[in-house]
Length: 150
Image (cartoon, rainbow, N blue to C red):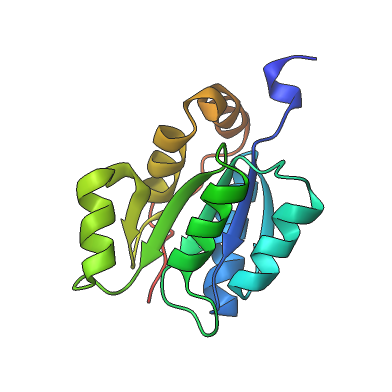
């Protein structure tokens, strides 16, 4: 099996349905298997169902119920190999500041472009980078103006 045959698996946990679907489409377009959850508890359940077979979790920091930070903490405890990309529209959060200082590649502020998302994903999953690039190069070049809001 060549590296093109294995898709990186990315979990997207975002409580805004339109934004979640947009992120999933962006990842899908670039050769990744994207799972989606509207709540942190649902995302945790998906990772548990897959026995941790998720490469990256894109986690919104602020969600009703369990926060994205709580989800990330639980994922790191149970499945330490799962990488975390925190997304947020709140730039003044102390938690976001601490995370950004510890690992700037792990934080992506809303709104963001498709290219910014892919850049962060590739930096957090270097072993998957060749798979993502190969998939992207094989597909029609999407507009770089595609992005997110809120």
